Length: 630
Image (cartoon, rainbow, N blue to C red; front, side, top):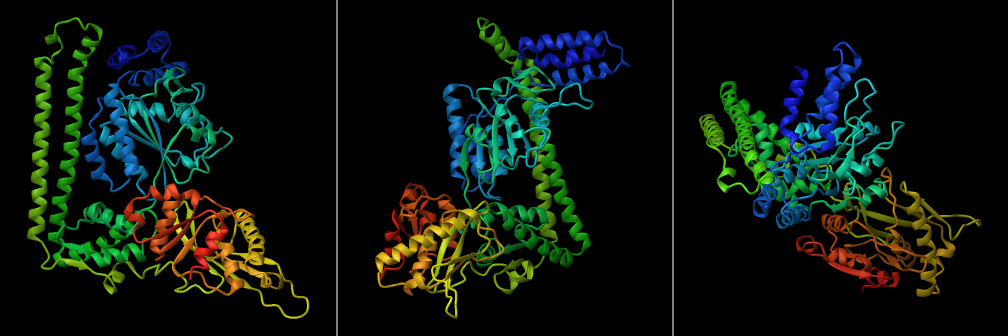
């Protein structure tokens, strides 16, 4: 009885299964038939057969290779992210021209809240593929990826085999989240285990320890997400195609809030479309004074907080009976949507099953007459019945949505609640945590604005340089002290800056012996935030030279760039994030290394709007723009 059940279970996938798999299953079935049900080996063999016959050998879902339709789906779900969308459309175009698609490994790198995880689901929808997500953040056990050996009690396959079983196809979209936060423990190194999984040359015969037979993962589209690339091992990174997602500027955040986040917040809070709204000044204040991070997750939290408070006011004004009536109507819509999704999935499966036999016949015996490959009357009847159920479910959803409108209209408040900026916004979300990134309206001599990049996006920082007041005869000139939680690289940059600044001052102003007679103190606010990296080199030199000459730098100017001991300005990373941070802080002039000119030119016009950018290759050019600009 059990053997027959496994045979029946394997039948739909038998035609696509490799000969080796058929042989292993046959041997295991013969073994199971000769075992006593009470023996321990019986349970091991039964579980093994259960997994072997559950995997959809050679069975892939019919994907949608339609560029126009995919573009509509991606645009409907996400604002911006043009690089990711273009890469997916390229994947579809290649599939159209080749007539078949192969798996790819795409890695999305960017700050938190920029849509890396949700774009994975949109990719699956655009391609009409099954979706599976698992996170490897903190993962330290290789068995999660490669599976346990069957000798262990409670052994089971790895996540990828579980994915194939749950999705029922061999070509899903698999999202591997937080790939930059992989752990490493005594159970092995998961990053090394991912090498086989994410290598297009090897994953066509991926060997899971539990199954112990090769599994074809070459048609899987892998999408990995990470905040930074530094912690991903080089051999693993080499197998990935990296697409960078930078932070959003204020205009992009406003569009995202209006098109997606606000609607979602209203739905989650049960607030009707016409019952409440946020004015444009309030939305701008929310973005600029409350939600400055690179992503939009914090903005989403604030919008949900606002509409929860609105929901409380509406519930109090409507009374309990009216509020419950609207809630029941909305619950009916949710149930109708779930029913429609189930019916659509069923109709798709019925259509695929009906086309499976003619497709198989055409593949095996192409010489048969064309009418043999047509869908039979019984199959067509099943397809029609499934489509009729979908139409009924759609009508039920439309009726449920009309019920919400009717319930909301009958119980609508007399006046819609409008949230405006100022004291009104403060009542909903409290006092703003940020007023401005700027500490100084006009920087004094010795203070220069720099640009920094972190995994959370870009930010402006000030380099402050001042002299240490000394009394007595034992004055120590030419010394340097640093504070501000600087890392080793940044401390080295400070030492290089001090050495170069002394040489530069001697050349530019030979009579100025300021550095010989003065002890310097360099500080980088805020003191509680750790900072590291070489890109503040030109900022530090400028702060020191500015102090020595008693000249403030050009107003509303920021700079970034690593400087060598000979004064050459080296390229840096995070150009887009730094430009966004500069705009947010009211900077109008930026100095970038000449090596970053191509990076800057790739930015969209709306990001570059209103900025005057100069590209420098030596510190003499930095000095000309920053201190000798008059």
